[in-house]
Length: 289
Image (tube, rainbow, N blue to C red):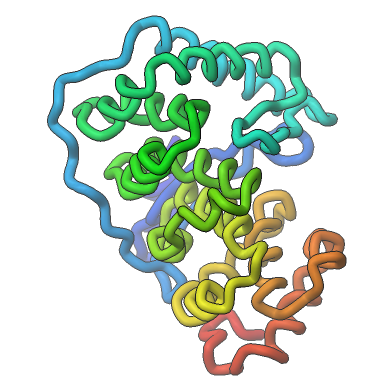
């Protein structure tokens, strides 16, 4: 399916797609098709060299992680509040009891095997192993070493590893303002301009947490380096996938936090109109209407 879609995009637009991804899920539990195209809002995102080590995770955590992922996707498909997530303690725990029980088992494993997870994430040549290690490491003890490893993995050559590492950092930053201060923003300002779906999705998730304090330096960096990408994402038709970009733009526009989520759930032009009053028009590029 991806190959045929890429061929069709090339034939119709004359450009190679940067990414083709079937995303789970919209409010009805259906998949959404993401097609990325190169343009002014897309920039190259530099990856780390591919690791070459032969180390692997234990079969125990591989099997447990597979069960957890299946239960999480099943919860998303149930709809209602089954997949709603509580990140308040720094771990991703969802309402669905089957998935939550597996997440807690993964946390129990992570607390006992931090060295294994850190080593595999840094050095395994198998990207699937690194992706599992990044996800499970998010359930381990919160420490500077853990955060540094996940920040480093956010430039892994595998999009699955980047996705899991950045998501774990987003959970940390959402749960604890002190932890958020330990996460350098530069990588994720670059990442939100990537042409890859998972990069944009997870970078915006993390930036949503990092911008809560409205740090002037970070907001200025986003205005200068990522404005076109954020506007493009805010205009996505699926509100759920556009929401984090809308909230970040709302903070750039100076919209009060007490009203921001409600406004972000509504028509996007309200946020963009507010943004135009605070950001010079010339910085909007091709996305200005």
